[in-house]
Image (cartoon, rainbow, N blue to C red):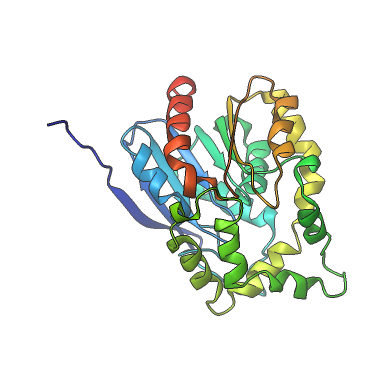
Length: 291
């Protein structure tokens, strides 16, 4: 009988000057590190199956941002919820865990958080796995552009942002664009909505939604970093994403001509339906590029 190996996954908190940040960790302590940054409206639980799939070969670490998942969620009058601040917390998280060399998995909100980190600490980044994480204007759908136009000071902007924080919308982010919705477990959107419905969480999400325009303003800086540093990069993309289009995936090749691109017939949360296809690509990529 062949030996079946399944990794232990640890669930921990780190205290960052009184801010408790939750994270999941698996894999050998001396293995190459992959830092996984989650999207909206999710948290590190979105990577649970990937940790199981790759955790015997690599050290995988997935934190929850403040205001998400199991991390502390101070009220907006006590914590400045901006993408710059989320990147500050992830940077402090890495310093607290002694992470100085790692590949970075960026998805959705994870792209603006992770690329901020990369431009601040380029010596830390040994490679990128980009999954529906946009960094190019051509990757923004009309729906995304309309949403990003809601900024502080725009009448009704907060109400528009709050209107998407419903169970129907959360579920649609998981099932929309998928080829076989039966492959998408309901646990993801159910847990996401549980966290969204906790006291004060929707106020936090509105604060971040009204700051999303700041990410688009930084696209040229991130693209310049990609061109200058040429990190080994794997791009995997769900074709049916209603927010971030296939053009955004292909745009990475303009600045990273050696990047590997794979487009799948699925939606925004591509791992939900296509983990059996995507996990081997990540495994092969890390085996070749991370030593």
